[in-house]
Length: 309
Ligand code: NCD
Image (cartoon, rainbow, N blue to C red; front, side, top):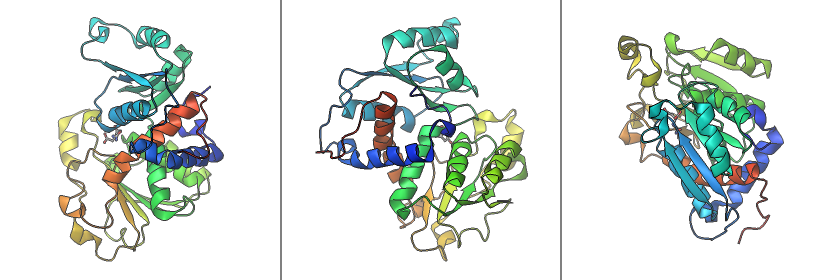
């Protein structure tokens, strides 16, 4: 109960209800209202891989709701002495009420959820899934377009190793999106994911070039080539820097179109885009706070009041 390992753990109604909770929590996320809904609760942030936004927004979310946070990192812990994930998670089961876990191994979040009694939130498992990122992505899309239904979404970059787009594409087709998948042939969306997307009745088009894809898009979701997942440097060098959006690329974009990126960006989005009306990636990063607040409340069985004041 309370786990979030993949987007299949949430129904469409659950998703909408978490997004509604997140919206009501916005003033708390900004620090304008104090609402200690999670006072006395402890979150363990279990990061076995680098993170800036995910770890810090989980921590801010927990603290803004009056809870506290244990920060684990694989540096400076018994992991370097050879402790297994199973054993580490047994400790956390006793120390915390809930855990967010990021791990380089695909399946590590499910493994942890099976190993402990506290709720587990998957904060990224290798090239697998990243459902809490998807929730803040959906929050950002709904904020901009007023709906999740029937949008044209272009996902660009490393669709093979990028866990954010694995979870997001699945969620989007459940709300009737049409998807254009833009990647080099070596980094295409895995076939089993593409067939899952199609099985939801989605219109899915695969392309290698971004040319001509911008004018019809409601959302362009850029991603970083996941260098750390490549078996060798040479393969990475072949695709590094392959897609880049500049402010001048956006002439002809629809009004209201948004550019998103889970960040960190490398060179996919030029700084010239930052000051355009389309850039939403920093707002998106902030949206991690209200969205993760709502997810923490849900997993801990704490109701977000219908009126937050
Ligand atoms: C992403 C991740 O870790 O998968 N970052 C994030 O959580 N915002 C994307 C990435 O690292 O490229």
